[in-house]
Amino acid sequence: MTANTGTAVPTTLQWPETAFVRGHRRTGSDVQFIERTRQDAQQSMGKELQKLILTAPTSQQDLARTELAGFEQLFGRYLQETGPSVLWDKIKLLPEGGAKPYNDLARPETAKVKDLLDKLVVLKLNGGLGTSMGCKGPKSTISVRNELTFLDLTVQQIEHLNRTHGTDVPLVLMNSFNTDEDTLKVLQRYGKLQLQIHTFNQSRYPRINRESLLPIGNSFTSDNTESWYPPGHGDVYQSLVNSGLLKQFLDSGKKYVFISNIDNLGATVDLNILNFLMEQEQPPEFVMEVTDKTRADVKGGTLVEYEGKLRLLEIAQVPKEHVDEFKSVSKFKIFNTNNLWISLDAIKRVTDDQSLHMEIIVNPKTLDNGVNVIQLETAVGAAIKSFEGAMGINVPRRRFLPVKTTSDLLIVMSNLYSLHTGALQMNPKRSFPQGPLVKLGSHFSKVKDYLSRFSSIPDMLELDHLTVSGDVTFGKNVSLKGTVIIIANHGDRIDIPAGALLENKIVSGNLRILDH
Image 1 (cartoon, rainbow, N blue to C red):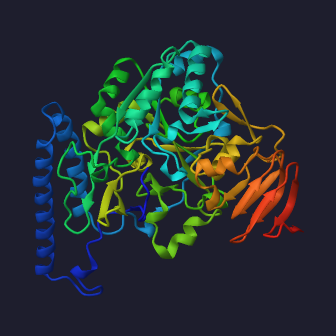
Image 2 (image 1 turned 180 degrees about the horizontal axis):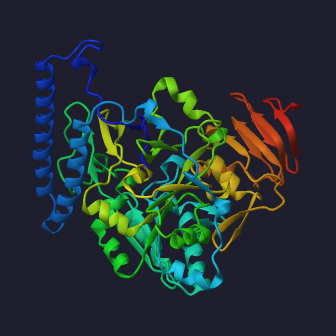
Image 3 (image 1 turned 45 degrees about the horizontal axis):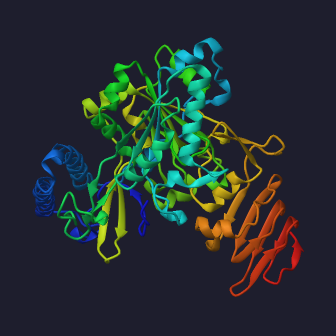
């Protein structure tokens, strides 16, 4: 995952404001000029892509041609589509039944479980690097609990499922060119487990110079990885087809794929959801797991009804004057966990007939050499409107346990959770079904620094809120309860002593402890 120096914006192209003055009507010559400019940009890009294909080794040119054809189509949409991707007045709240309550789902009979699992494929999105947490290599190889990595836990879950039920659920990893090589090395240690593991790479698209609208790279085989980028997890559909795995799974009788982020430790195979899908007379082609929004989730994408279909609405699509409304927990009550259950037959249909549509995410970045570039990306959940009978299922919070930061890492490493066959389970002694809100400052942002600041992970069973800022360390066997705020001012250091109990306290730079 590269450092993002810009803001990811799901949108279609906003032609530069210099093209016309806001409030003035475009003349026919204006429209013609803009259209010619677009056509020139499209033709110039096409020529550059052909040059890039020819730089690939002969054995890779077919792959290069396939991938860059997808990119060229996305670039064409970027040039052609104008205006906002949604009109706020057309957005409607979910209709009754739009998100089915999880508690309404029936647990399958034990005798049915093997048959259900025999029709399932599990796919983890594994394209991200651990750079945002100060680690090298794939994020999935970071240790998160008992020295086990995200990948270890995922493999353990699926292998246990297969052994318990005598089934053969395959695990599929969608890697990126950033994570593929290192992931394949790690997979060698799982060779003796009862588990099929397949991998495929998502596409590799060229970064676009923001000024010239042309690729910044000049060779398909260039070692300069800054010239290329993985185009978001919306690429999973076409890349799964291109890999040949979709056909293989359909030929072997598989019906559904469960897709989730590999860093979401709550995204385990759920038999109740799988049973619901299989017992419907007209099974939904696409199910998105959503969960209740809290104040910590106000930026998360939500499900809405738009022009008669379910649609994923992201905060970057929302007009500025409606952002507070979007963040409202009382109006938009749920958000997308990115746990998705999708019909394999439907994926084949929408890719074959090219009816798959996802909003373009325009992601601006500034490279180390100062060049401003844009990346055109898509998100897997945005495809919900392309499938028939799509719906949401409102799942318990336990199914959304992402580890994006060391603050999240502290929660999953604590006594709030225990580990059973690769799955985390909330401690039954916890009074509340939700975990605490934890905010660790910049001194903790890298995993190495974070680990060095805890002699042992504190007791957090009764913690509601923790904020830590500045140069702070924790001794062994510290207990945190209620709301705890620890702030070391610049130049100060706070060492929380071993065995300390902090309950509803503010700890300041001179270690004064105040009632909160």
